[in-house]
Image (cartoon, rainbow, N blue to C red; front, side):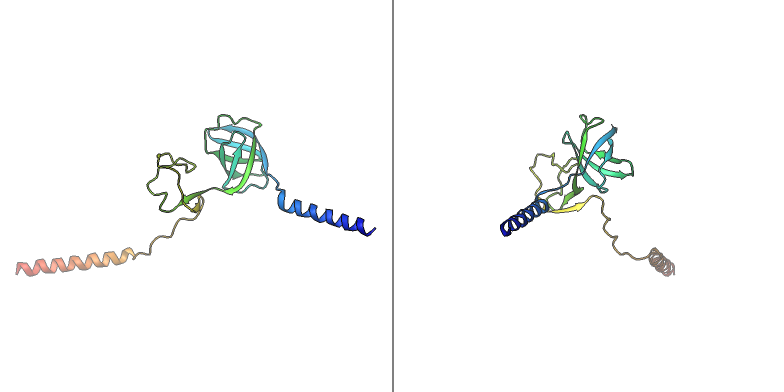
Length: 165
């Protein structure tokens, strides 16, 4: 009897380890409508705004319009093979681009794939596409500039008056 309970516990522990470490649920949807670079998708209940989507023809899309009945996604490729009923899979990754010195001066497509023939981009830093813009540098008030201009005009007129005498 002791051996059976030990075996049962062993098998149950192994099953728990297996399901916790190796299984992953996929968020899958079905294309309802596609046209003009936009796809309407049914399903994808757990998709986030800005998340990358992968269509069955390997076209990449970005989930932008999250509604209760469907998800609107912009296609980042031609999407010519995407039809009503095609499947779509959420990747779990939010759209981001590489940043840093390696990207400066490079010519890239919409998915940041280099198209300038200079090889791949090896930047390690990335930035979310939908992120706040950097802050504006602190600057002086416009009123201060008017005061400076007024002061300079007064000096100029004073010099002009002194030169006439």
